[in-house]
Length: 72
Image (cartoon, rainbow, N blue to C red; front, side, top):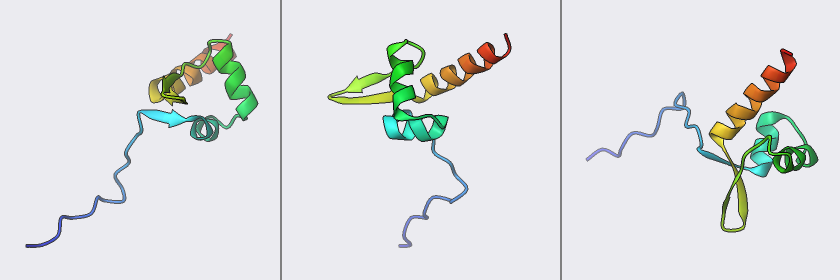
């Protein structure tokens, strides 16, 4: 019986939740700015135990917010 095929390298899996360092990299902003945006209510997060995570949808909403503000 042949082994199952490995996933194609061209397939991209999008995560539902990002750790803060990952969100920093995705948004190209510093840890300080990330936490300022969270405290200001501009970037939504969830907690899983003691870990703060940024939902993928919250990243898209934050980018849309920045785009709207730029268009003003």
